[in-house]
Length: 118
Image 1 (cartoon, rainbow, N blue to C red):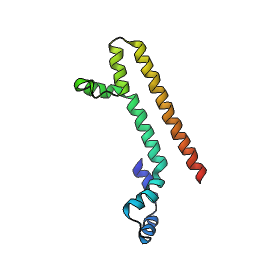
Image 2: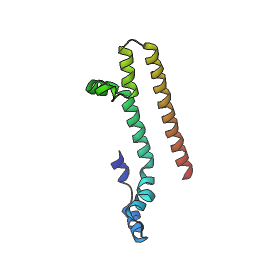
Image 3: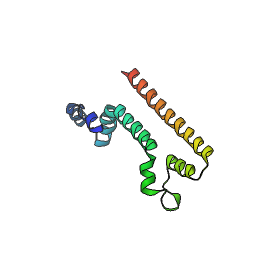
Image 4: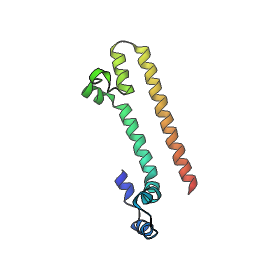
């Protein structure tokens, strides 16, 4: 997705920045990052949602890892469910839902602000 977002960024913008004396870091923050910001935010949002929605892969591979150190909140929820504490597991599930809703709201707000700049 990020590579596709980089395709329409014009080489002329990079040439103009080079002629103006902008370095690589300044070019990245002033040309590249603003051009791909929406796609980057969407990619991050989707990755976070996918990680929250696929704890079974993580749990199957590590099972919580050595001394329960590789748990994310959803794999911890699976472990709590296996121990029979369904109330605590459902509370963790609600925390996950609220966190995902806040993250999605932040993304939508950022996209709306970006459209307002144009």
